[in-house]
Amino acid sequence: MPLRSDWSARSCSLARGLDVLGDPWGSLVLREIFFGNGRFDAIKERLEVADNVLSKRLGWLLDAGLLAQRPYRDGARTRQEYVLTPKGQDALPVLNAIIIWAEKHLDAPNEVSHMKVIHTDCGRPTTSADTCSHCGTHLTAENTSWHSFKRSDQPVPLAIAPPETRRETALGTEIPA
Ligand SMILES: [Zn+2]
Image 1: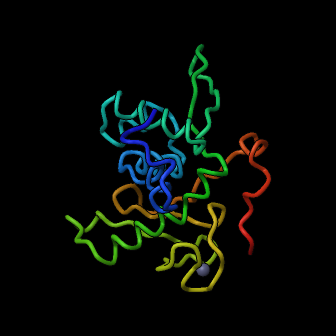
Image 2: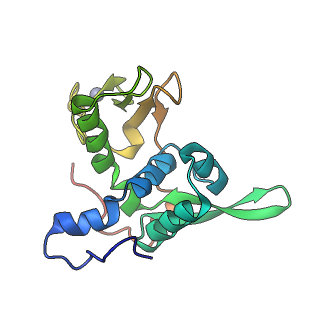
């Protein structure tokens, strides 16, 4: 379900990466999943986005292997929520870098329109996307929180890929320390 002309076979890895991660709505969907907000109606409410726009991004991220579906009970019904895969979880430093770059270089419309990337263990904001700039620890989804001032008073620990999504991609996904 491509969103635009297919860049998946471009000779530049930045272009191929942007083919998956360069869509604003798609990256905001990933933001919601990292915040643990994986249910269609809740994502839709938070993003204030039309059904078809959201459905297309979720389908795209599923096809690209960044998200998986997991059943949950909604009263008498079983519905599907969206969770990260290891491939999706590995997009974290990309999103962190965009947040940190925007905080450094772009104006915010008001005082709650800020977001900080926090190393959970030391509690300090980082100005580096994959290493805590305060204590030097390698940042992963397991030890990173995002503090959206608009969203909450406290940083929110990020969601991680659940174990059942790790079976097919268990090899080659570990980032060397
Ligand atoms: Zn730290």
